[in-house]
Image 1 (cartoon, rainbow, N blue to C red):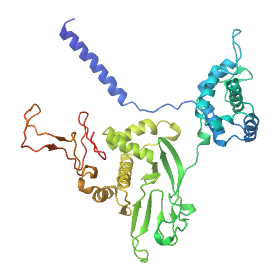
Image 2: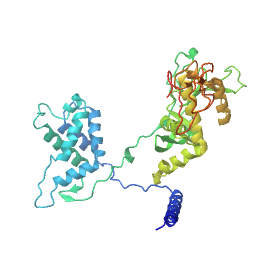
Image 3: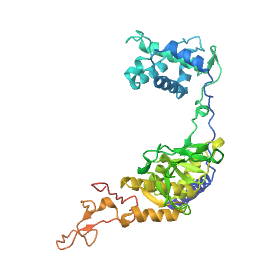
Length: 413
């Protein structure tokens, strides 16, 4: 084969690969719903009786729940243990304290606090020689009590799959962070709920990568100064005595747990922080992150799908950025109520932007950002009369794989 024929053969193969990549890029990225095993259906009385008869009477709720969820989150290990416990061949022997369960016992011993681990045994039951076998039997009985076994009466029934926790998902209500009025003249007066029962908003909450629909949003009010308290801000009248003036000022809460990123959509700070970090870390646009999130998380659960819009991602970026900068400066950012996102961004830059100059860069100099003057890259001549060249960052960031510049409190990197 000549060099030219090899080259054209390579081009043909390469073009096929390109077309395949393009074709895959346009495929809908919807993850199939993974089959699961239902959450254990067990009466609380049965559960309570097993705990009290198996473990110490002084065992804490935290330890019980820790062991309980340890079993829930390890269906593969329970399958392996149950198979060894239920022999199917004449050459196999049943073993309740299998090596699989023994490994789980040692894991618990290493991570449960000493006081909590001791309460997994009744009084004078723990011995250094037999504790692992004893605890293995307890955990085996616990899994049987919960129905977390692929066998029924020694006969194979159904392999355990990841345990669904949908039935125990908590219900979230978005409330004000403050529990009393923070205005000096109100002396810590309690907050009354200002939202009428018939007007309680029902929104979608993004918590990390999980989606919760039908979440209620409540607003509090101080009946003395009439300041409104939401989960993400405080709103007060500019002139409380003027009944004809309804203009309000908002104070964005730096410590808010949830942010409103759309008319009927809220997100926690983990989500908004991920948006900011992806845009700075990967130089992702709002559109790029929006597509990534929708294809990765928004469509991962067909029963609870969500499609974010670019505006919602940009709102999360702006809201999180404002609070991050305000918190670092230890100030509360105030703004007229109901500003558009563009006006809010402009005001935040005016109030918090320090004129486009990074505050931590003031009076800073080091060998990384200050270099001797050179006429060219290959210039090795020393220029004693030339001033050193210093990098200054104004209203922007330097991006690229070969040049990365960041100013910390006392150094460059």
